[in-house]
Length: 156
Image (cartoon, rainbow, N blue to C red; front, side, top):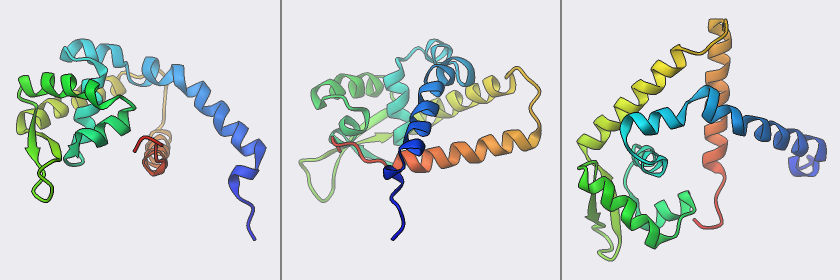
């Protein structure tokens, strides 16, 4: 029987150390989140919600679980996004008690603007990176996203 990866303490410790090292680097060097937030005039929690909605509608409960924010605290965030015309509330057709949050065309356009700003930031990275290094980074990020999406929060 194959050894479970979680039983490999050295591997677990290595992953934890890598994640710790990435924490301060990602928002400061790879993507300047503070700049993104300032340029678009919205808190990071709003950006997170809009990015999550790019994959499809989510209920308030699903947003709450994914962001680890209590449901009552999600409501004002959604209200603010709705006031800007970036999201709308839609009752679930199968269960009218559920309210889904839907990204509007204006919201998709705003998300596209944010992605374009991230692309501009990426093009300004210092250092001489080869095309193959950037392709390797892109593949590594795709793997991190796949794994992160597979991790379920206890709140979900």
